[in-house]
Each structure stands twice: as C-alpha cells, then as structure tokens.
Length: 159
Image 1 (tube, rainbow, N blue to C red):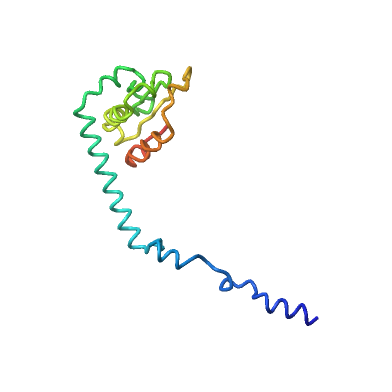
Image 2: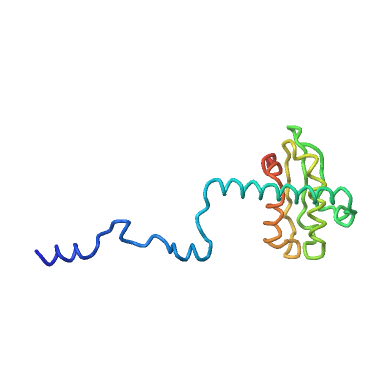
C-alpha cells in the first residue's frame, strides 16, 4: 500500500534526532548549561569547605555561649552507655518546647553535647510519649540541622 509507505516516510520516524532534546538556546541565554565534571568537583569542594567553616563557627559559639536555657529544660542529655559501651543520648520530645525556645540555641546545645562523642559510635534514644504539636519544630529547621551537621554525626549514629 503506497499510502501507508508514504505516511511512514513523511512521519519522520522515531529516531532520537527527530525530536527536540532540550532548548539549547534557552540554556545558553539563562546560563543554565550542563556542568563539566571538573566544575562539579570544584563546586562540591567549595561547598564542603563552606559547610565545614559554618559548622566550626557554630561549634565555637556552642563552647562560648550560655546555653543554660536549653540545657535546663532536660529534653536532651547523655544518660550513660549501652551494653556495647556506646554513649547514649536521650531526647524526650514532650520536654522540647519547639515554639517557645530559641532554636538556634537548641542547635548550639546539640552541637555542644554531641561533638565530643560523635568521633565514635553513639546511640540516640528518642521518646515520643505525650508529645504535642507545640513540641514539633518545623520541617525546614530539621532539614537545616541535618545539612549543617557534618558526616561524622550521621556515620557514627547507630540507633
């Protein structure tokens, strides 16, 4: 059938070169171009240095500022060691007044408490009993804390 043959020939086929793979002009105009491998390594290295410097500034502040308003609440403390000898940090959610506390000071206290022990394995026990909406910090704050803390905090956390 000549009509079918002609239609398939004029349709252009399904080869990848027959379809637009992205708006290259738009990428050029907006400066949104794919990064080369060496650029990624350099950018990631600089980002890593910036994170490290930010953490070190927070650690210095944690060691020098008065954090008694957070430590006095009793929601976060070291309770001893587990049967494997790992330090155990206890966090009681119901005692954390997320909406009535300076969250930056809470972060500083977390760093102050954990920095000496995160060089090795450690355990965090979280108690959620009787917590309410006033005990929950924002999801954005939790994400910020996660991004601020260095890899050693995550790597050595065992439970």
